[in-house]
Every structure is written in C-alpha cells, then in structure tokens.
Image 1: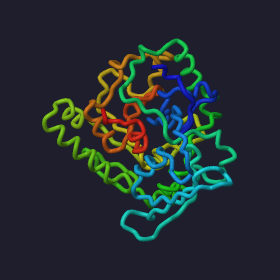
Image 2: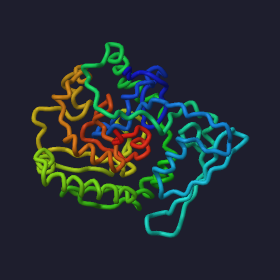
Image 3: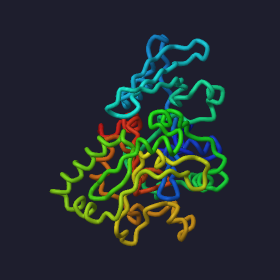
Image 4: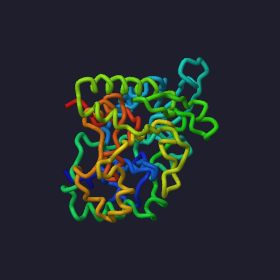
Length: 330
C-alpha cells in the first residue's frame, strides 16, 4: 500500500505541502518529551446522501464514540452543512452541563467562525494502521517526504488538526480550568495524572493487562519492567506552536527501566543516528508487547508506534479512530 495516497486533513500537527499530508502513516507526530501529536490523516470521502434528513454515516460513527455527549443535528442551508449542538455534563456525576455549537465540516468539527478557513484544517477521522508497517518497505520518495515532514520549518508553519471539539469536551480552555478535571491515579503500580473522562477505559486497560500477565510471560515482564507512567503535562509539542494531547490528560507514556539497546522515540534516535532513524528496523525499536497494544486499542487508545514519526511509549485516547479504522474487527 502506498502510504502517501490520499488527501490529508486533521488531527495533530504536521507538515507543509498537501502532497506530504497525504501520508496516512504520518499519523501522529510526537511531542519532544515523548509526544506524537503530529498526525497526518488520510482523508476518506463520505458517501453523499440523497437527502439532508439523513445524517452522514461518519458523523453517526463519530457520535457513537462519545456517548457521554448529547448531539443534536440540524441541516444548515446557509453553510450547506450539518450544524451540531453538543451538550455534556461539566464532570462525570454532576448535573450542570455545558454546550457548544459546531459544524461537521467533513469531519473537522469546526465552530462557525472557522468555516471560511475549513480547508486549512484536517479531518478528525484519519487512517490508523491495522498492522505495524516495516520501514524496510519505505520507498526513497517516502523517505524524502518524511525528511521534509520533520523539518523545523514544517513543524513551525504547518496547518493542522482542529482542536475545538477536544477543547470543549475536555475543558481545555486554560491550564487552570483543565486541572479541575485532572485526577491522580495508579496505573500498573505507577502514579500519574489523567483526565477524569478516560478514568473508566483506563481502569479496564489495567485490569485486562493484569489478567493477561497471569498467563503471558512477555506481558508479565513488561509490567515488572516498567519505570514510569506519565500522562497529564501542560505543554506544547516540541518544535511547534501547538498543544500536546498530554495537555488534555488523554495521552500516556509508558517507559521501561531498560531499553535493551533499542530506540523508543524517533527524535531521540535522530539525535545520534541522524537520518538513519527513518529506516531503523522494528527489531531495533523498543515496544510494548503486542497483547498490551491490542488491549489499549480495544478500549479506544491508539498507539504511537504505528506512526512513521514513531513514539513507541505513547498511547492516546481516540475511540473515533479505532472505530473509523475497524481496529480489532478482523
């Protein structure tokens, strides 16, 4: 499969040229502190509906991924688009609610003020690989595009993912406000801070990993060999002007006590390998056991190791991407 097919649009922050955006595997770029908030999505065209009375299939899918939100859809003739009214409680267990108005905008979920700049944003639904692709399959052309992708100029000037929906859902208007929704937890024996909205899926992840460790030697060694688990940290993505998903408390980094001589993060590898990091074999990259990755994905978390700008310690809560890419259905 040619990873540079398609048009890109969305989520995390990436490169400059539209042809470069077309790389589905550029899925999330990282934060210098193990982050990958640079994602280059592969746009998938929605099927046209014959009637405005029927909401798009992908909008319905997106809504199902966030059952805590009450969505009300109305067709807006002015913008020829679906207008979305969102209502959600301020915090789990509370009765006070907050509301927002967005437009579907082909999966971008934008406020009205951004509709005139629609093409500058990417879709919130982009390609996330079913299987990890070997860098040995990359063509010379793809390698050159990857070099441009991670250039300082590209990371500073690229358009990127619309964060408006996530700002609303996670109350990320400011550090002071979001920290009212950050909770301390213990995960696999390591303390960390996360957003309260991912508490339940993360509990299920922990339980499943612990159960797997009872019969799986590799998973047991992974749990025993963990050095730290880090999540919430209010910061920008290194080398960019954009906020990291760690700032939302929905990104988690799991670091081992020992790397066994392997690399874990593309930028750290580049510091001493130069451009060699791009073709670094999977066998020379540290990564969690496949069983652990599948457990996270089952609960709505994507893994940064599947991005071309790989961040193998990194997991991030995006149930819409798991559903959109049919992860775990095969």
